[in-house]
Length: 215
Image 1: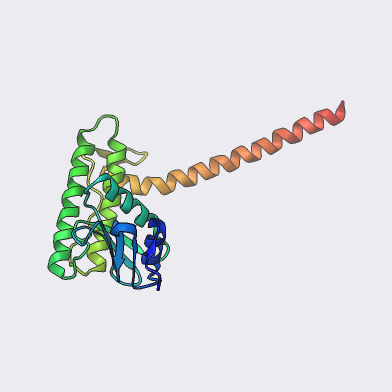
Image 2: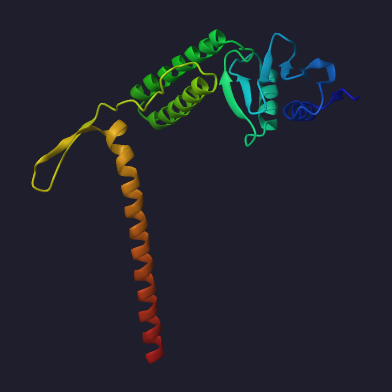
C-alpha cells in the first residue's frame, strides 16, 4: 500500500480514514490511525474521536505547523464532523475533557473582557465570544461534563417599558432579555415594510403604464 503523498492528500486520507497511515515526504505531516501530526508525536494536530466528532488543537508551534493545521482543517467535512478546537486533542477521560473546558472558559471570559474595553472592535469580540459560548455548551453536552449551559451575559443596560397608559411593564436587560424578543418582531416588521413597498411599486408602475397608454 502506498504511504507517501503530498500534504493535501495526507490530510484527505486522514479525514476520510481511507487507510491506516500515510505521510508527507520527510514525515513533515503524517497520521497514524485517527491522529494526525505535525513533525512528530509531540504535536498532534487533530484526533477523530468517533464518526461524528473531531478534536482540533488550539496550540501553535511554528509557521509551517500553522500551514499544516490549515491544510487539515480544510480537509475536514463539516457536514459530517462536529469540530471542537481545544488545548488537548488527546483528552480521553472526563478529567482531561474538563481541563479543556476550563481553558475554553478562560478564553471566553477573556473575549468578553476585551469586548467591554474595546472601542472600535467590540462587535468582533462579542461575536467571537458567542461562538466560544456555543462551543462550550456543545462540548459539555457531548462529553457529558455536567456544566450548566452558558447564557448570553447581561449588557448592564437596563430599559424600562411601559404600556400606552404609562403603567409599567417591567425593567429588562437590553442584550440578555429584551433583544432576543425584539429581533423576531423587527424582522416581521421589516418583511411587512418590504411587502408594502413592493405593492406601492406595482401600483406606481400601473399608473405610469396607464398614463403612457392615454398618450
